[in-house]
Each structure stands twice: as C-alpha cells, then as structure tokens.
Amino acid sequence: MFSFQTECSLSETIIPQPTTIIKVIGVGGAGGNAVSHMASSGIAAFEFICANTDAQALSNTRTEHRIQLGEGGLGAGSDPAIGRESALRERAAIADALKGADMVFLTAGMGGGTGTGAAPVVAEVARELGILTVGVVSKPFEFEGPRRMRVAEEGVATLARCVDSLVVVLNSRLEEVLGDDITQKRAFAAADEVLCKAVTGIAEIITVPGLVNVDFEDVRTVMRQTGMAMMGSAQHRHAGLAHHGADVFEIDVDQARHGDDFRDPG
Image 1 (cartoon, rainbow, N blue to C red):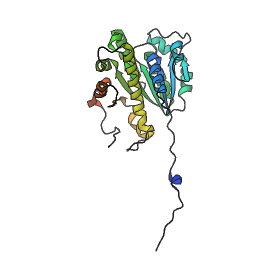
Image 2 (tube, rainbow, N blue to C red):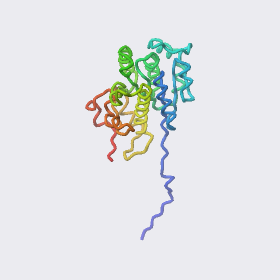
Image 3 (cartoon, rainbow, N blue to C red):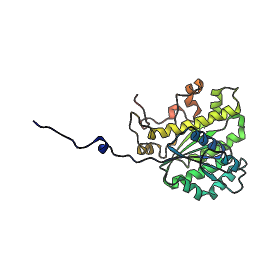
C-alpha cells in the first residue's frame, strides 16, 4: 500500500499576482468633479489626480495630487486652444503624475475650454509612456447650448485619436431619463455618478475577483486601440436610469464588440 504526503502548504502554492496600478485623472471642471465624486466614494484601488486651469476649482477637488495647468489660474475662458496650450506647458508635470501606471482613466467634460483642449494632451502623454489609456468623457446637457455642443463634438473627435478606448456619456440623454423637472445641480450630480460608474465598471473587471478570471493583459488586449467603447449598468437608484442605462452612452448596443468582450456566465 502506498501513502502519499505533501509538505506543500496552500500558502506556498499561491503565486502572488502583480498589482495593477490604475490612475484616474480628471481634467477641467467636470473631470475634477467626477474624480472628487469617486474619491469621496471610498474607492481605494485607484490613485486620483486632478488637472485644471482654474486654480480655485482645483483647490476644491478632493484629491491630494493636483496639477495647475497654465500660470494665471483663472481658467481657459471656454477656449480649447487656451486649455491645450496650458496643458502643453505642463507636460513634464503630467508625465510625472502618470508615471508608473499600467492603466489611466482620463475623465473630462467636453465643450468647455480645459477639458476639451487639455484632455488630448494628457492622453498623448500617457500613450507616450506606454500606458493603456481609456477616455471617459461627457457631452453637454441641452440647456448648455448649441455652441458648447459643437465644441464638444470637435473635442471628442480629437480625443478619440489620442486614447486606446473612448466612452462618451450623452448628458442630453441623461436629461431625458431624469425628466424635465430636474434641477441643474441634480443633473450635474447624476452626470458625475455616471462617469464614476463608467470608470469603476471597467476597472473592477481587473480589480474585483469574479467567476471568470480576467487579468490586466486580457483587458489590455481588448481595449488597446479599440476606439469607441460600449458599457452599461443595470443598477441605479433611479429606476428610469437603470432601465435606460445604455441609452446615455454614444454608441448603439448593436455596435458593441462581440466575441472579445468579458461576460459573467452567472
């Protein structure tokens, strides 16, 4: 009769996995608000960074790492050219903030000066560092006017060429879901939450264990130079937003990638 003994304990058989370093940078007012919302939600898996031309708005963000874009500190005056120039002057500071990251989420509101103009510069720096770069941005609400929407369209087109994947939240559709009686304050708060869910929804594929083992390299393979991405959530305190979750993203569900996506068999 043979008897077998093993000297190997469970702890000895577990191979430690390298930690994926994820940084989230909010650019401009809307991006800073979204990152502050994430930081206040107690998400510990990310490093949060804010960059803005508006010194006062930057000082009010709930992040320890802040980058002042430009010298005046008075904002970009809704001019993307000023936002871009301000970011170009701070390329070294942006690079220092992003170094060491495996993945960067860049969040911003399109249509203003800083988010529209500076976000592509931040994305270019991240890509030059070899970092997987995912943009999560919003287009304006209808009450913000047609000019802001035109600027946003141009900004999205520019940013799409600078990131690996881009998720665009349509605040105008979010406005439809929330109803005409929604206040501007609540509308912007809802937009912050959608941006937050978009970032965490993608990042949790890597950071939260699931039934399907998905690591960072899997995500890199799928998202590297994907272009427009699609994601949605079926959970929300507002029943209408849960039902119409996919409607607030600028890509038809039929256009979403098939075969290479991550699915939970449960």
